[in-house]
Image (cartoon, rainbow, N blue to C red; front, side, top):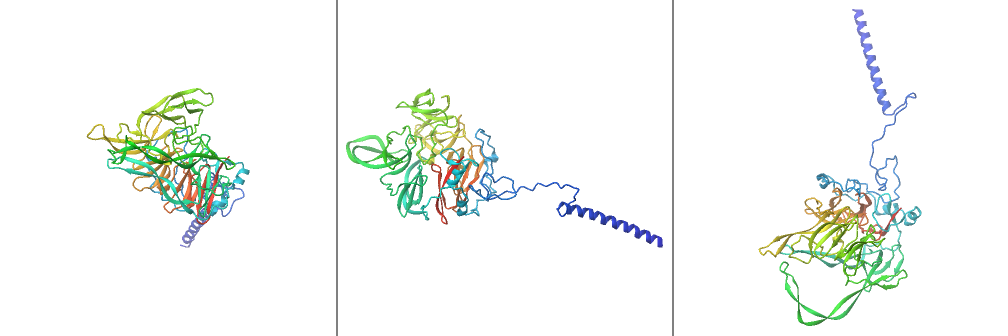
Length: 560
């Protein structure tokens, strides 16, 4: 009995010691893995840490793997999710468009204002002087490219601390849909608060207490007392690229009295083409255009409104990038005084003899031209690759579905030029009435055609607002909110923002429902976070921003 008890105790002791030994080994392994101790004879293999998104970094370094956060020295990226989760588009890849790309990300929320402030962003930017010392130059033309282009703070003084000190008449458009479906867009003006810093055509108009002054892009004052009622700065340029100022005068003319008739489709009274026997004396407004010399002298320009197809005509009139309407190859349009054709600018070789009523320069390998009957797409050899009949926009009874835009402002951006193989066209569908020669417009919208005339598939429920830099500005027909899609069909800015502008120089102003605005590039990456009360579109490389805490500031696009 005694031996059995001793044997049992011996066996239990061995088991307890074995279990304790195993627990000690497991515990030691766990402690070693957690880094509580090391063995001198064992080389520890470093474990690569999980990649954590880094915030408040410049856009071109936000994806770098580093153990410490770099200071912000250039335009900071947002500390929230990007507007779109897509890679930068490849200009050489036309890409296929999938249903997944066309579907917005409904799980993402409208972006909230960043934790950064306008002041911290302002101080984080390089000054223009520092940028010049670092090898950057002032941005002249082209597209903003992350890692190559930056925003620098000009440090201009005396720009004002209030958003506005006065009002002015700003250009706008009004679209009217008449009883029979006719849709007409017309230019008009609207009295609104004048921004105290207004960028236009390479100049800066500063308003302090209602007194205007005109400045150059470097902050130099050209006119300390600027009266825009005498010389109004327009968005037009002459053939040398100089900004045009309009001077208004009146003169008396004998004018015939037109006979008006009601339009069959709109009901509006319009000129019939016939006139009364009598004439009437009228005071007619005459516009004379001037440029401003470097020493502040007014120089009369030969530009006139009487010649809408002048050498300087680029199709649309808005505060456009400096290279807008220029050919990106050696083939340029030219005129014989009556019609338009194309020639090689370097060799003088005629590519297409003048035969077009309208012609626009080449971009991305193709050009758009019109005669009296059709619209044409041409390649650089002068070969017509696609044509379609069209009607003038004032024609309501039309046999064709393609027509020109009613207005030539930024609202028609994307017309007349190709970008990434696509160009914008106004498309109308018509229904025949009981009289075969009467038509009613059932649809009036913008579409994108490729070089073969194939229509780009805009997502269902969306309207194309503008197209530029390979970016579609789209509006949700149900919510009224805006977003941006690239030419491949991928959303770069989710359609959930209350304010989005067309892409100009590769930058897009994005505003949320809280009223805060920022800038994104064509890849959907933040260039300026949404911390401002107002952000202007780029104007000759300048961007004006306003926040109630910092007042007005002007940033310059600069590139290496």
